[in-house]
Image 1 (cartoon, protein in one colour):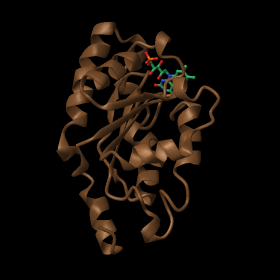
Image 2: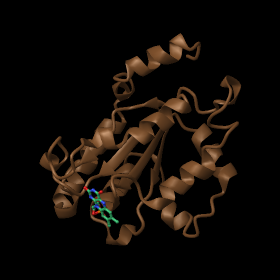
Image 3: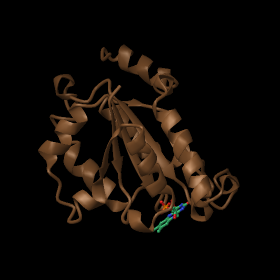
Image 4: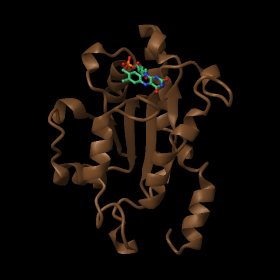
Length: 192
Ligand SMILES: Cc1cc2nc3c(=O)[nH]c(=O)nc-3n(C[C@H](O)[C@H](O)[C@H](O)COP(=O)(O)O)c2cc1C
């Protein structure tokens, strides 16, 4: 399985968690791209980006959780790269259909804040729903996301340990199966 690992962190030189995970992803043999270094001006080579997506089976988006979402470059990437006629549209235009999409997220706050009534109120998977629906529209298999709580206070050891867990998660073929409900919906719509 070919894994494309896109890293959206504004400054990896100042990162503890995302830099450790990026290193772990490189060691695992994934195709790793540091998107802020490649596109500091937010101007994508859309053809190149789309070609990379087509050439891989599992697409991973790694980012630090910023304001319950991603850093701005990832939003721009979604806007510019997942175009009509390539990522969504009539059935024959769904060029990414059947590939896996996995999110790999460093979350600053602790686990007990991401519960109903906690100061972050919602769980991380709930807050990631716009990504899940984006995958659904593009007929990508939205896999179980990977995330780490307490990233703001992570030690280099924590970050490294979670980097190993992240690689294990991303190389597990079964993570795309838990959304079997989604697959059933695809089937009922005549899309396999
Ligand atoms: C602009 C900004 C927004 C943030 N928003 C959140 C947030 O909504 N929830 C949260 O738990 N942490 C938030 N954080 C903390 C980051 O998620 C945390 O610093 C990051 O995951 C640590 O990873 P790093 O060591 O790779 O930089 C935010 C940090 C910044 C700078």
